Image (cartoon, rainbow, N blue to C red; front, side):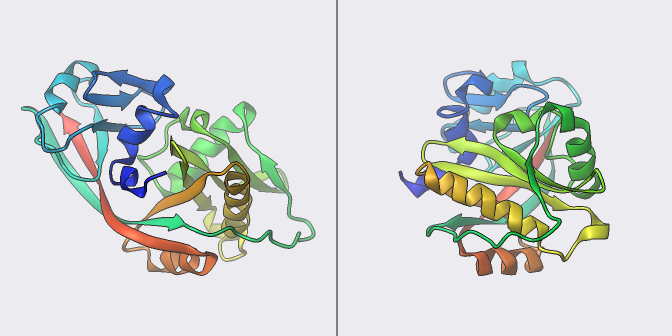
Length: 228
């Protein structure tokens, strides 16, 4: 398992563990519409994205992660979000159970609540069917989904933690850490290394992840592009 694959995580996922979600060409691919708005190519230095134009609708927005290839005519870079890419290189010990807090597996019946929660806090990166990419856990209080976390880009030997969020009225109670702990231990048991991306501006989250044992591997950007 080579960490260099994480320099181009969407490509690594679309050509390995999540190939069933991929459409495109031998050199450029995207996730199926409705899954997650990410596209990628095998070589950012080559002119491969133009061939993907046929799989993208006019007006559609999507993200390129990592190095920015040459954009085809009519594609416009709208925004860049620099992130810390963090990797968990050691196992995470289990957390003590807390009375009244139950971690539940989320599924189809929770899809609308999941979509509404994450997009109320981190809009644009999570579609209604993003949950199909991996395992998602949540915490409910009085029947309301107040926190969630799950798996997004999965490539050989590595799985990304994503959609890590807590409703603002319930922040600061350690719910996100509890969900991350569950996912990381599950991944470690399967021989998988956990990684995640967090905005460089979110210094509080970076400190929490660092405290949990994640190490910053590199800075990597999520660039939002729109096809005119």
